[in-house]
Each structure stands twice: as structure tokens, then as C-alpha cells.
Image 1 (cartoon, rainbow, N blue to C red):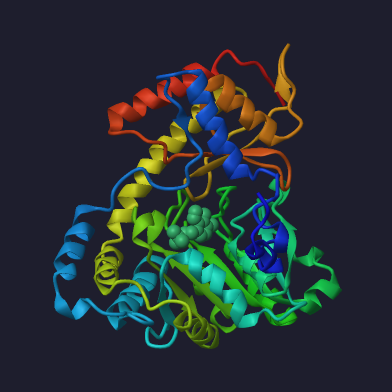
Image 2 (cartoon, rainbow, N blue to C red):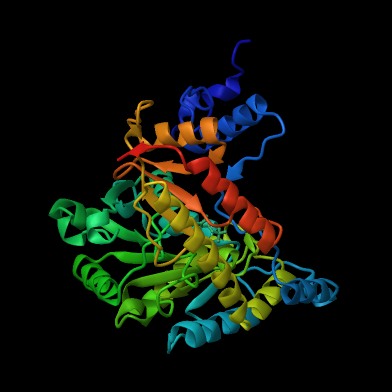
Length: 411
Ligand SMILES: Cc1ncc(COP(=O)(O)O)c(C=O)c1O
């Protein structure tokens, strides 16, 4: 069938007249297809899904109850625009209580967002002109880089290397790149590596930003999920508020992925510009959801309970992976394990990439993982696998162990 005229109208940012005709299959689509094929080849078998990046449990009952209560109130029915003050107050109080962040003005330095993904998508429009650069860590969550491109800018990759604790080497950014850079995107605890930032690294980031006049966007989607010591906020670094902001999400810390609620906090000028862009995109999250978010933020013990569950699961995963030959270590934060992919199986297949190995795991062992080949070949395994209760969790982990043992992996 001939293309309709519409095909010629697509913008260059989404591929122009080639939009939708690209035959390249993207990683997450490949994973989905491989899962479907593995199930078709093994009817009735169970896939152990360690690929998902979201909690397997509901939001806690107190949060759900508050939503139901607030949803019935007429005053919550309308547009929320740039948010209700109670949520901003609760966010500032939460940052103070959990992270020790002082001196945040909840009127001007905090703003809600319909999840952190839209915040990452909108921030480039406040800063990036054609030709400007965003410095972004790789592997990583790509949204800020994608929208930097949409805005006519470019992204410059900062590889996360195991030898540097998966922290970017800011001193390696060439001078001409620094000159054109306007944004620096970092994400700690990090997806996918599970690394946490040190206080020294955050101090280096502030110094780098000040010296090179860039705005820091610290994506704290996993901030509260840490396993070694208290969670750290970029905003508790001296000078952080002068150079950027941090984005906190309700998604992972409170099992609220589908609720779509997050907040940005930090520099007043950056928050204000974000609010300006946001006001031109959406009309705010449902006020009842923001009220339920207040309940969650007032109950950080919810996150502590969630963290303990992931600690238990990650500890068991590390043990199982080590027994299978992987160099697995407990991550500092997040719910991910990031391990080097093997080069092959003794007397059998060899793998050129992590994607090859991940494909083998799903086809041969019905284990779903996410491969990363951006800075070395690694696979990511998530502790959010589906399990109905603790007993079921033990069953899944036992099954994983059974499937992984006996494979002689070569690294
Ligand atoms: C690093 C990172 N940032 C942001 C997000 C998006 O979170 P939200 O649900 O708040 O949009 C994710 C989701 O997986 C993520 O991994």
C-alpha cells in the first residue's frame, strides 16, 4: 500500500519520513519478543522475570485509604496545575527527616511532577538551545538525553566504569565539550549499576558545575533504597542548591509506579523554569493522589520495610549468582544487580555481547534479564520479580538456582 501524505509530514526528531519504517529492533522489544517465543516453545513453563524495573507489590494500605478518602472530596476534583502546597510542604519535610536536607523553601524550591520521567523530559526545554550539550551517564535512563536531542541539542556520554565505582570521570570531559555543556545528568543510586554516590563525588559534581557553569539534574528515583548506611541526597552537599536540583519519585520508594507522582527540589531559578515548562505541558496530578503522596512521605517507614524486602532478595540473588560463577556483589542501592556477562559456556556457545548472553538465558533457561553493552558487557537482574509471599519468593529463588547450576560459564 502506498504511503499516505502523513508519512512525509513527520518531524525529523522522530525520524521524518522514515518514522516507523526502521527495521532495527530495540532492546526492550527484543526482550519482549524473546519472552513470547520462549513461552511458545515451552507451553505452561514459568519464566523467571528478573528484567522488570518496577515493584511487584501494591502501594501500602494507608496510602490507598488516603486516596480513596481524598477522591471523594469535591475540592480535589479540579485541575491541580503546578500542585498543592501540602505536597510541597510534605516533600520538604521528608527531605529534612530522611536525608537531613535543611533550608529548602517549599514555596519556591519544590514542585510536584507527574512522575520523574516527565520532569526529565521537560528540563531540557528550559535550557537546551540547538547545539547545546547535556552530559549524561551511560548506561542509564535515556529520557533527558532523548529530549535534549528533540530540542536540537546533543548528549555527551560519560561512561560508568566498574574501576571507578560506576561514577563518571568528570575530569575527562574535554574542554570544548565543557564549554557547550549546559546540563549534567547523574542518577544515584544508579540504574542499572546499583552504585551509590559518595559525598566526595557529590562535592566534585558541585565544583564541576560551578566551574563549568552547568546545571545538575540528579535523578534520585532510587534514593531511599540503600543497603549501606543512610540514604544520601545531593541537596545535602554544600553548594548543591546553587547548581541544580534533585528529582525524587514515589514510584520505587513507595510502590507507586502507576500513580505517577514525583517532585523536584533545589535551585529556585531551575525549579521556576521547570514550573514554566510544566505549566505549558500538563495541568498537574490529581489532587487526591498528591494527598495520598503526602501520607506516604509522612511515613518513611514504608520505604524501610520495602528496602528490607529487597535486601533479603538481593542477598539471596548474590549467593545464587556467585555459586553459578558470576562476580556478584550486593549493590549500594536500587533493586538491581549488575553483573559482568560471561564470554561463553564451556563446550558450547560463546557470547560476543551481553545481549547475546541475555538471549541465551531466556531461550535456554527461561530467565529474563536486561543486557547492557554501553560500557562493557553486563546484565541487570532485578529483585522485583513476581512472588506472592515469602514462601513463593523462596520457591522462585530455588527454581532460579536450579536453572543456573550446571552451566559452566566462562568469564
Ligand atoms: C533512573 C530512573 N529514573 C526515572 C525513572 C522513572 O520513574 P518515574 O516512575 O518516577 O517516572 C526510572 C524508572 O524506571 C528510572 O529507572
